[in-house]
Length: 301
Image 1 (cartoon, one colour):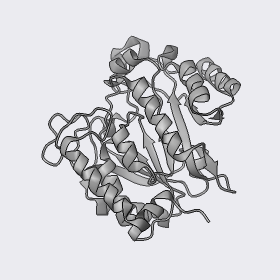
Image 2 (cartoon, helix red, strand yellow):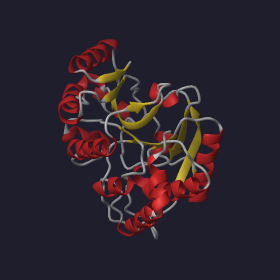
Image 3 (cartoon, rainbow, N blue to C red):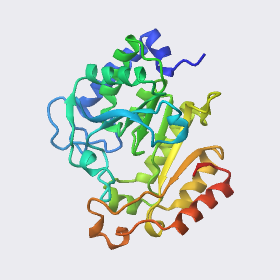
């Protein structure tokens, strides 16, 4: 019978220790790859994520538009956090990630939402944009586990995650779903205000895969553990798609589940960048999917 990873840590008291440690990290925050060093218990000044010790909840609910192995019949139990540790100029959800629409909540509120999603029949708890709120996530998971949470946890991230955060999440997260946005560091700096994104992103993906391995599914095709990767196509291959897919196949696993996404739209400040001010063409999508298939990657089409 499937048992989520976090329950094993809860039984030994390690989950509670991880939550305490995460809040200590907030005193000089290194819980995302920005490593801003701000004491988030006392201020948000200088914090790239513009978030204190409490998470800002944008919304939660059963989501049927996620990857098929996460959705099944009951949906993925998505919890959307406001703010973000990236500043993507073309952000598709900028009202949440850049304008901070949402309400500040306590870990008890997050735990209650998790338990409601489980009661609705969702197959997992899917934390969206979680990198800057690892501490309240761990605290909420502890509370929810004590109250009967028994479904997998999905860490649905922009992929700019720190080794310190991933060490705290080891044995807590069942399913990692990072973005792999860029293959070129200068392009990442220009469009997402992230230094060394490819190197940091790839190191994070390797650590995630070390923790959970390739995607595993139950007899109904529902994901229970493993790595899923999202790659958003950008116009004129600004995302470096071929290089990223080749790296995944050679340096992670040729069995990596990859969602090659073509839903890019020129939103937020994209109109100020002529090279970003159009959608992705069908030809660009088909060429990317064909290349992924040639590499043997398990792609979601």
